[in-house]
Length: 475
Image (cartoon, rainbow, N blue to C red; front, top):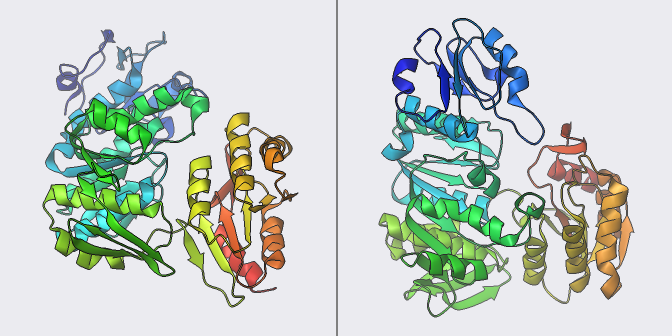
């Protein structure tokens, strides 16, 4: 698409014309700019794209989108806009031809369970209908090709790149995790969703959204842009979503649910239940996983799958790494790795564990969480009688000492038992040496992440499961 054609289709406040050109791509990262790119200067909380305009031009940008006053250069087109993130999405969608409109895109949102639900839906789609791409925490998987992405919900240029790749490979379905940050920051603007799923909402990201109402409002952006909406009737915020969007398909154990789990029974090998008289069995003892599975069943039913077919294939879902994942060992320990990093996620895991077993949890809290959030985590751990080893988890611009103090203050009400070990590897070893056969040892927070942010946003290499296995091998 030529720039002269593009400017007829997007909103802007002012324009200073330079030379016309065939647009190769658009980006808000000056390091990714090449010849014939459009560069969008976004002013964020940490970086201001306006400071990198000269770098973008040196790298080949021929058009600059900006919000602040800039120094004009010959042959360069300058577009002043009100909302650069919205413009980035407008340009990306226009030059790629709105690829989401040619696909069945399924978006999953909620505080917890996005990764499991989106990957489970992709798995079931592949078993029933054919290939399905997935975009989320672990990057994008397009027909077996892994594409690294910047965030759980990457920016619109990365998303459209994955959608275009899916079309090239003849893939008709895409699932993606829609984070609240991604929705508010318009990383999904212009994406047309066949199905939008809301699972749950609990305390998180209030440093960014400020209130639960604003957090919920961010999640509902997905519903505003979805042809079919699906929500968890067992979650209070899910009920609110159903009230706001009356045509929403509901799931849960509630008698009013459209897709309802009945005769729910739990054994040490998994959970069995019925949906409309059809038997289902899932290989997990985590109670909270039932909602993820019901969300997936609801989605596949909307897409045209039969419950009987789903019951045949759902049992073999291999699960998702670091989502209530057992680590095999010869010590007779129940070792579980989970990405849980919110009070609600901690509580749901603890509720799923046998009451008569000793439980040890190794965890920390990220540096961008507020004092109340940290105290809630501490209180949740002590409420369930878990022995805590409080360690490091992405302190970023905060300190381990301040973070751990806040966590421990939350344990005070129930006199929670704990040990403070700053070095995460030492904390893991302490927990494994402390545990006796039959005990549950939980490693929470890091999951599949391959880094720890010890200093600001600088990433130090880290592998939770490899570290656990290394220590198991020497004790």
